[in-house]
Image 1 (cartoon, one colour):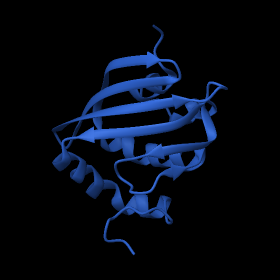
Image 2 (spheres, one colour; image 1 turned 90 degrees about the horizontal axis):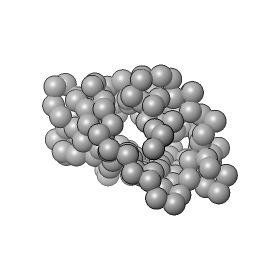
Image 3 (cartoon, rainbow, N blue to C red; image 1 turned 90 degrees about the vertical axis):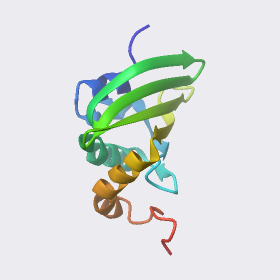
Length: 135
């Protein structure tokens, strides 16, 4: 099976702009760092480009495909702590990524990631709900 282009971009540390053409302009990204979905190709790329450099030694350890879904299982490190994540990618009938859902663990390491990128996320996503106490 050929590797998914999103996987290749992340593994080779290429700019995610190289996969921008694979994303639906109205892509919906369900991020563990935001309560509300992040909508739109430009916003999604901006978030990923600001968050991914915080995660070191990213490796895809499994890739699964069925019908219009691709699942990528990742491992990496944040400040020396291990993190595991799963991307669930849904493709539209045109083959473009129309939905990206990211789930990650363990919670204490995700909290560390959140603390590292929170201020940048507020600037990138002024209308997103990033905190449960946000009004």
